[in-house]
Length: 251
Image 1 (spheres, rainbow, N blue to C red):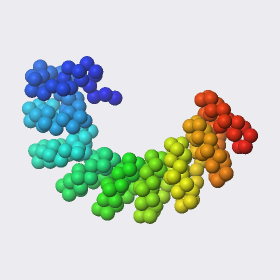
Image 2: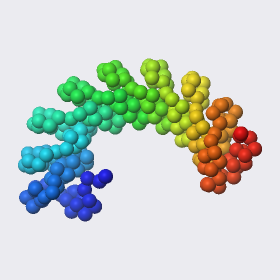
Image 3: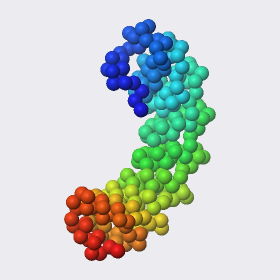
Image 4: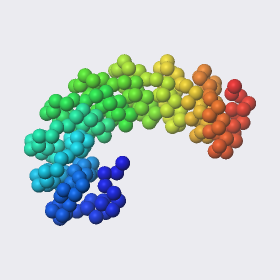
């Protein structure tokens, strides 16, 4: 859900708060929403002005946005001058964005910590440096979502590192996602080095992407097969060769 309406964004989004605050203060929570907008938009200087000159509250989600910012000077100002704290979502978000300096600062100066989502999301987004740092300095660990997400997005460097350094492993969602997104190198690596295999979602997804080569490879190398969705996916998009192969070769 958007913080501001299109009309509000056009009228106030790019203006300094000093130009409108005296007119809008106390108007149905508008200042609170503007604080959220500035925090979400990394408009640190404008947010600082609002925090000094406006007594309307700021949401916890907005504070988390501030503390997950790449701009350390803004979160340091907030840390030094405000009583509102962040939650674990701050480090989780910073990790997912790949903001290692922010993650490190939060680790050293704040007590909230993070959750397994920090490594999970950093891995999914291919932020290997952040994954390594969290592995070394934090104790929350990760879940199977880390390797599943990295595989789905084709980040074989992250997949291999997790395989060698973490014990959580992955689920069939790793190969399913890699196949569906045409990440052939990752698919082959998972097939050779992991035991989870795939589900019918892999061939279903490959069929829907018109990836006949992937459909054939899965048929020859994996036991999962497909569901009726494979034929539906291919037929609805007019992928005739895939439809023919599924009809003649796949049970």
